[in-house]
Structures are given as structure tokens and as C-alpha cells.
Length: 240
Image 1: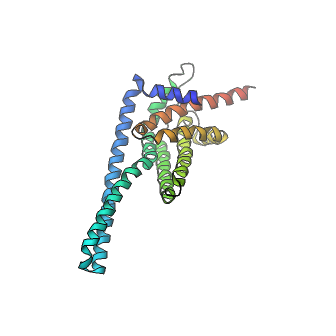
Image 2: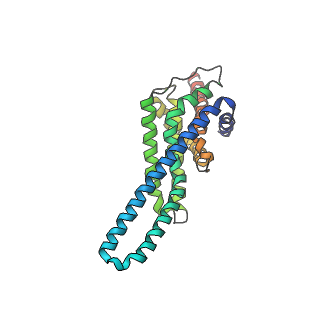
Image 3: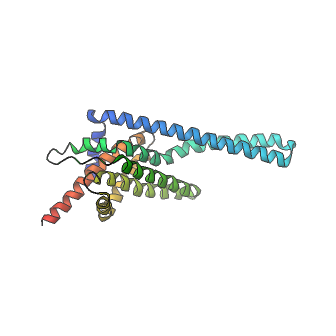
């Protein structure tokens, strides 16, 4: 597994991968900015609307302390967006992966000259899987937030859930280039322990600021190598 991770990391910074690396990172940055602007607008609107309601209820005499409270809320909200961006990266990179997984996978598969290159996953299928994982990642984030102050319990919950979701997405996208979707899922379940452990490496990668923009490339390349190894073992076992 570590060998596959080292290979994936070395490949992602090699010349053949640089174009897709820059494009995938660029798309991830754009998505983060769009999400941040949208959330900032939503939070600002909620704070302002709540302030108007409170002032209307308590009267104009509460305007000064209310202004101070609103300023504090806006500051906390802005700080929360910065922290939230880290937790939202698994969702963002999941969406980006759906756009670039086939291109990345083919580049990695060509490093195995003795084996055939897989067939591209249909765009609707890839996007459906990516949106599903992205929504699940956001759901996990929202569930983990209340536990962030409980001795870091929320961060631990988020890490393990991310490991499962990321491992599942990247392995199945790699496997579906060689198997029908049902078989790809069955293969992942047959090796769920290994895939989850591999997902922990991806979860660790996606938790590193800036570097995590390259998660789609690392995750896809890593799981292509893992699929080659796991499927190769099954073929050897079948021959016996």
C-alpha cells in the first residue's frame, strides 16, 4: 500500500501529469471561492435579518449593543468559513475527481505497458458518484461540527468518515474502468479493510492545506495502483 502511495505521489509531480494537476487544482480553487462567497452572503443575510428582527422586538435602544453583537457574529462567521474550507475540501475534491478521474487513471494505467488500458467511465455515472460523495461529505461535516469542541471528537469522526468516503469513491472510479459498476462495488466490498486503510492515506492528504488541492490526482492515481494489485491477486487466486 505504501509503495502504491509513493508511486502515486511521484507520478503526480511528473511532467505527464502537470497539465491535469494544474487544471484540477484550478477548478478546486474556483469551487472553494464560489462556495465561500455563497456561504458568506448567506450568513451575512441571516445575521442582518436577525438583527433587524431583534431591534424591532427590543426597540431602538438596543441598537448599540446589537451592532457590537452583529460585528462579533460576522467576525466569527468569517473565521468559521476559513476553518470550514478545510472541512469542505473532501466535498470539493470529490466533485473535481468526477471531472478528471478518467484522464488521470489512463495516464497511470499506461505505466503498466503489459496490461490493457481501461474504458472511460461515462460522464453521468462519474458525476453522479462524485455528487453523491460530495453531499455525504457535507452531511458528515455538519454532523461532526457540534462535536468539534468535545476533545476533538468531531475531527476524529470527520477523519474516519472521510477515509471511508474517499476510499470508496476513488477505488470505485478506478475499478469501473475495468468492471461494470456492480462488480466494482463488489470488489471494493471484498477488500473493504484494505480500501478503508488506503482511504485513510487519502484523508490525511486532503487534510493538508494547499496540498489538498491535488487530492483528485493523488487519490485517483493511488487507487489505480491499488486496484491493479487487488484485482491482480484475485486473478492469480482464480487460476489456482
